[in-house]
Image (tube, rainbow, N blue to C red):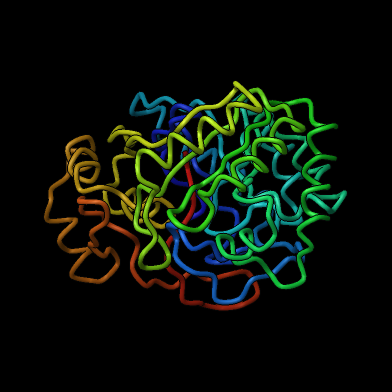
Length: 330
């Protein structure tokens, strides 16, 4: 399913997700990724879905939502992998413009060393880039990048994009205890964000089941220290450490909504219950999806989550493939 939600976003309100990358084509295999590990990283942009198909599915989804009185604040490219691997991203953004809804892209920023990627992202209204680490060894530990990515070249690409971009730029730094939450990385991240001068920078912590065991948020003292160090370089800083809430929108088809959202956004049990009630459905639908292994229940941080189970997603030109679930939709 290419379109999901809208889901409640702590930054974008009610965000209608566009899943323009099949699972899991990505340049990173981040230890905290909520979609699971990347079996083989890649960095060469290519075509996945025709822009016409994406636009048609967005229009169809919006029609169902409007019939139910649901609100959409942003159309957000936040897929099962890295959205800028889509060589047709800029074309798709342009074709979505007539819908009159602001367009956001949540990217890890790793491909911004490519001029064509910078050009595509410049067409969006709001862009988030990931700045988890400035020290190269820490970057490799937390983001597990494609071996051919040059960290210095990548950071220069982010700076070049920020200098040209006229929309709203945000940065996000995901902190993992014992990996990238040290003082040296905080100083380096703060100095780099100051050079980008975004309207707002965000620090976040894992709140959903991660790709690798043992991934946890820093404790409160360490998180506060990291925050204060970065804020010493830029006051435009916010901490995203709380739950975004259960206000997931419904199209009226409970099973489709659950599978589409859970493929990129693990759902707390309370959110699943709220979606069942909002759709007028029954919990038996959830039980059936779990029995069929289309949804899997898992525990993280003292909460039960439902994530997309093993499923087959036909990728263009490849036949069926086995996929899992992923992406930061906040």
